[in-house]
Length: 344
Image (cartoon, rainbow, N blue to C red; front, side, top):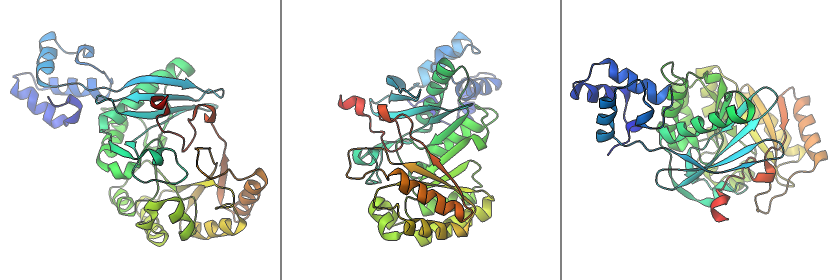
């Protein structure tokens, strides 16, 4: 049977009419699924027992569950989610002073193979569906209430996978997370991170994407970037730059660049100068990341080089900040998600 959350609200309304139920029943079902976030037909307390029985007979209800969780000494929490087909993805809950951010996955594994990322070394299994992405929000929101006493304040699509290679499902999940008849989150509280899939950046622009866009740049030198991110060979820097200019023109939004500093790879002042030059084309914010060990041959840039890199960019009047590591002791930091609990 088809999963109830794999069909549209319009299809639900059609099914309701076919069952001879009153039209408002479709709205009740949709509200239960996407606003209240129920995880079974039995939780649909606004429906009669007979209506719930009809749903049981017509649809399945596939949900993700938390199979394992780890807590870091800095209060970061990592979750291993088990999907209906026993595939696994990871998500991370990141507390800061006044907010809690959930880092959400969009694919089981990742097809891009970025050389410094543990997820890239897993290979790719499949895309997540919208409701599987939505479930990560529901489960981590419950944990946010339990651990920190309030709901999630921010969501970032920076977990496992490349969101723009699962475009329809990711946009579907964002719709249900932001719609008034869904969770009702503000678009400004959601950030989508991509390595820079040029074709889909144009699509985001044309569809007036309202959430934040972050690009994992990591180098403004074509040779270095193609070494670090093999997918950039088909999305070269000149094409990416033009796409981002178009995106800014259409959305009037500031782009965030993510830049992980790797010792003797992309952390010289010459690298900083190339990055500053690349950033001249649009309004940007630059997040400088410390490298998190993933068993690769790369090493984190030493503090003095990181400071020099940051100071160079700030002297160019660029908005730049250094993001400190969180969750490294439980393999929950950027680039470390690789469902390692299953290996243990």
